[in-house]
Image 1 (cartoon, rainbow, N blue to C red):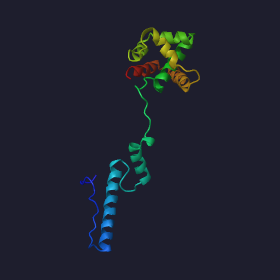
Image 2: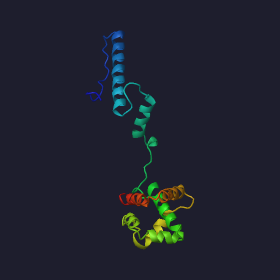
Image 3: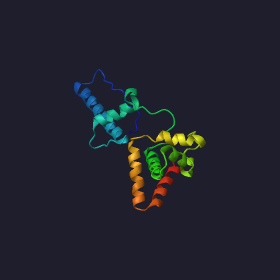
Image 4: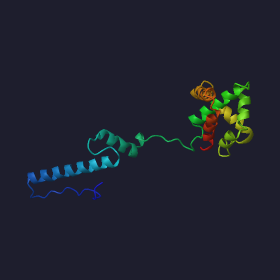
Length: 173
């Protein structure tokens, strides 16, 4: 923004003519407009064609409690869509060999990928890992369909190394 911290107060003398007063007011309006343009540019809303509603909205979202977005309290969930899709794909892989859902989750809870994912922070390492995997596998969720299709893509293209590389990405989270 401008070098000045603020605008000097408008002062009118008793001997000033109406034209001089109008000039001061016009000069102030021009200065305020220029500072608004600089401010709009500084918050990423451009300096040439300015949507003043967007400027006002952006500032209001920063300063008016009723317009601020609610942020979830607590730590971020480790379980994103990617992890749920990969879990669904792995469960599909094991169920296609004849295992039940619980058996598949039991097997997955022993694999390094899922062991490292369900670490001490999650509080699910060990015997609770199977329960944590079961909890994340929601019947009829979009992730199940995506996971199955994702796994089948790798299986049908004979690229199980690619599937393993995808699984390895879970560890890096």
